[in-house]
Image (cartoon, rainbow, N blue to C red):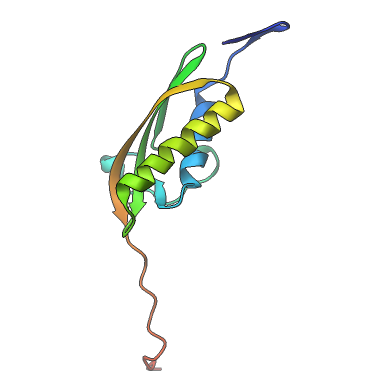
Amino acid sequence: MLEQEQGMVRISDDVVATIAGLAALDTPGIAGMSGGISEGLAKKLSGKQVQKGVSVEVGELEAAVDLKVIIHYGTKIHEVCRELQENVKEAIENMTGLNVIEVNVKVEGVAFKEEEPAADVPRIK
């Protein structure tokens, strides 16, 4: 809780998780969030479901974030994850004023681009 002259401000875990999920999906190289291997690979999410693959612990002044992500094939995983950590930390700190003490990332899958049909292949009708 942030103490203000007018009273206390408490930011919901769901709000912090939504901010983290949106920042993650905006990071280049991230294909989507994963709810875990048992739920299969998730596609890019929006709205309330953006919290899938995100868990947070929010204290009075600090927050810790755990992310489960799917990375685009061909990207440098360590670079994407480092940028992801920075983006999520910055987004949460800027929007909430909380100090993000850690952003843990677990890469649970790799997404492959869908192949497009070749233009020079004749179609049979």
